[in-house]
Length: 338
Image (cartoon, rainbow, N blue to C red):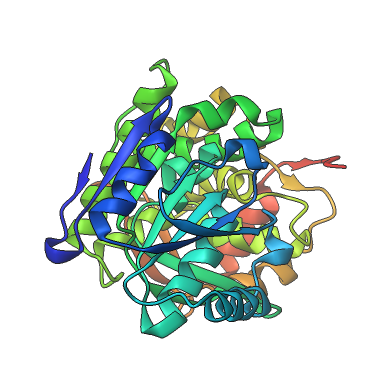
């Protein structure tokens, strides 16, 4: 599948064994050296075909930091990496984001290739060129746009995932129905991945740097990101997005943008994937609203991507009391993610 961005165009390869094509992609770049940053065991790391420094990584929000980016850049420098070489990420979405940002910053930009190994990373994080790390003040607040040279979504990696990582990825797939993929339920998983990637690629091509249409990709994310922060990341990204998608349906209904049937559809889709639908029982609504104000889209008050008569769109300056009332009306659930 192509992401046609002119001189920044690249291919996304989806299927079993896709990682075996990495060496060919490295050769096509003319790279003489590679740094492979991997959150997976050595036996899952593909050959690059060139002199390679392998660096360990850990998936997870606690390691998605500026200090991690700085350490990677220092290792790149000690290895002698140049702009004519390549960085390869092997891991989930947090690894993709962190390694992508390090590649974007080192020498003001070194080519990067992503091998996403989780469902969430394959359907979302590895595509589109967004890289970012977290600050104590908020999620993904420091980043850059840096398109990869290729993405290899090897579905064999998914066989290694624990059940909760499947759930995490399904959160991104569930919200896709409300941003233009149509109903993906019932399709084979590779087709659901392909449809999600195709829709994201279409949006990225139309709006590479978040000037308008790309906001659609944040469906369910404003509340989702705030829930991650409020629970100290015990609630994972896809789980937060799933709850955020249910909330987005309720808020769109409260604003008169969609009818009761469409509100119910949000809940039905999220439930179909076995995802959480209620707010954590101990959640403080005042705290979560304060966290949502830190969202990157919130330039004027609270902003949300919401469904409506013409489809999803960014709605700015939503009345805070209505947001609070909608949150208060949502069911609460006890989550044990230990």
